[in-house]
Length: 446
Image 1 (tube, rainbow, N blue to C red):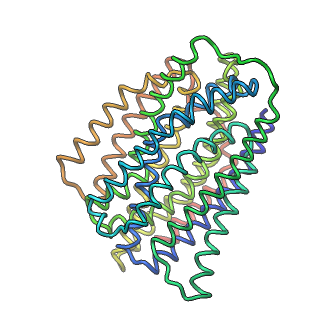
Image 2 (image 1 turned 135 degrees about the vertical axis):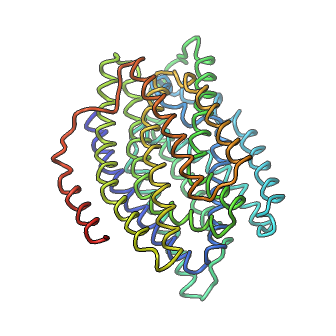
Image 3 (image 1 turned 180 degrees about the vertical axis):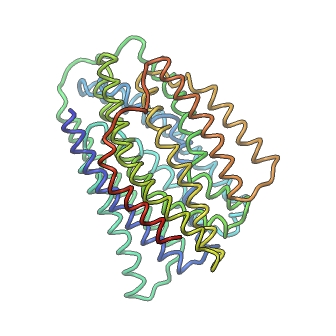
C-alpha cells in the first residue's frame, strides 16, 4: 500500500507540475490578448462555475474516503451506494443549482457581457464538472493516478493546441466563448474516459450479496453534511471564489490581476492538492479500519510529504514575490501582481495544512466537530465584507489573520483528541540546496 502511494505521489507531482506550467503559459498568452478587464471577466466566469460546482456537490465527493472499503466489497454495494444512493438522487439538485447560477449571472453586473449561448455552456459545465469531480476523487481513491494524470494532461494539451492552432492557422479571434467551448468539449471527453475507468474497476469486483452496515444511512448523511460545510468554507478562501468577489467589489481589472497572480501560486497549490489531497485520501481510505497507531503513522507520512513540497516552494516563491514588490516601482501593475501573489500564496500555504487536518477529521467521521468554528468563520467573513471597505491587499491580509486563528483551533483540538501534530522530525539537510538558492535570490533581487 505504501509503495503504491509513493508511486502515485511521484507521478502526481510530476504530472501536476507539467499541467500547471502549461496552464500558466496559456494564461499569460490569453492575458496578453484579452487585457486585464476581459481576462478578469473570464476568470470570474470560471470561478463562478467552479464554486457553484462545489455548492452542487452537496458533500458528495469528500464523503467517499470513509466508506471506500464498504463500496468496493462487491458489485452490489457499488451499484447501491454509488448509483442508487449517491448519483441518481443527486442529479436534480445539481440541475437546480446550475439554473440558479445562471439566473444569478444574468442579473449580476456580469450579465451584460454574457450571451444566451454562453449561459447554456456554463450550465452544462457545472453539471459535467460536478459529476467529474466525484469520479476523479473515486479514481484517486482506487489508485488510478497515472490514468487520471495522463487523461487530464492530454486533454489540456489538446485544448491548448486547438485554440491556438485555430487562431494562428485561420486567424480566428480568441474569445471567451471559444475558451468555454473548449472547456465543454474537454469535460465531455474526460467524463467518458473516467466512466470507462470506473466501469473497469467495477468489473473486477466480486459478485456477492449486498452487505451494508445497519447504521450506514445515518453515518453517510452526517458525514456529507459536515463535509459540505467544510468544503464550502474552504472555497471562500480559494481563487475561484475570490476572483468573482473581486470583480464585484473592486472591478474587473483588479479581478484580472488577482486571477493572473493566483496562477503563479497555483503551481504549488495544485501539486499539493493532487498529491496530498487526492492521493492522500486514497491512502487514508485504506487504513480506515486500522488501529490509531497505524493511522497516525499515515498522517505523519502525509505531513512529511507535505513539508517536502511546501518548504522548498516557500524558499523559492517568497523571495521572488518580495523581490517583485521591491523592484516593481517601475510599473504599478508589477507591484499589484507581486503583492497579490504573495498574499494569496500565504493563504494557499495555510490551506495545505487545513486540507491535511480536514482529511483526518473526515476519516474519523468527526468532521462535525469543526462545524461550529466554520460557521463562526463564515459569519465573520461576510460581516467584514459587507460592512467594511478595504483594498484588495488589505482584504487578503484580514483573511490571513482569520486563517491563522482557525488553524490554531484545529491543530490544538486534533492534538488533544488523537495526539496528531504536523510538527515532527524530518531531515533538514535535504533542504540545504533550496535554502542556498533562496539566499541567492534575496541577494540578487536586492
